[in-house]
Image 1 (cartoon, rainbow over the protein chains, first blue to last red):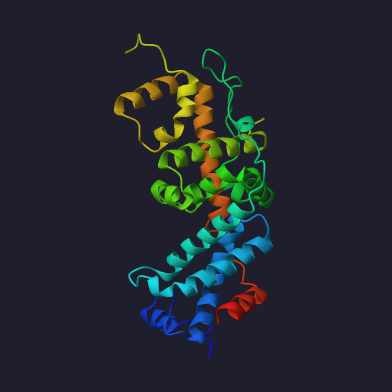
Image 2 (cartoon, rainbow over the protein chains, first blue to last red):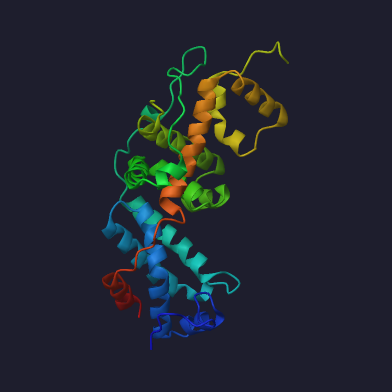
Length: 204
Length: 83
């Protein structure tokens, strides 16, 4: 019978649960899906552009996970393992539905004069991450600005700054060089900064 | 060192991520900080760049963002294909 609160032995990542999953125990699958779906759906929503795509990616991920449960190393946390599988499922879906042509990021990058100075001086912001968190509309604004980034840069920003994966891991996941990851991350952050700038400036 | 030309803003902004990650050589870091000491525009860019990262992290992954209950229809759909 399904239990809402896993016992200590059957918590996600517990040896007993993994053994039951490997033996094809249906109630173990159900427990894993029920306990892990909320957090994993949240991850998929970050990457995908629609709720439907996020749900489809999560479904892909669980299918992939259950097919490869034999490869799960018991020293790892099953939640961490699933998290990575969800990200890979999202990346796979994003690759197949990539928008053509992708928006040019150049327009969001800073411009410089011939002498190397910034063409338009930068100004401080009146908002901080802490003040933004206290205002629902600003939280939504930041998320919409992230969503506006071209996928090439948005995905790297999510993987590096939000998921906090190492550069080398991201490079491997995307099939690019670590240097390409660094460049995309810097440009993605610059573009996001440019999108936020008019809303965050200290205009007092 | 005082007689040497300052790095241009292009160099500061181009290598900002390396500066924040502590990946610049000690000499290069000194040149960066020499520029920042006289360029409020680059200081503002640096601070807002850093705040951009913090805002992105806080609004998408912060401890105060609640995790919704999993939709039952989604759970049933997943279980129907994996069980």
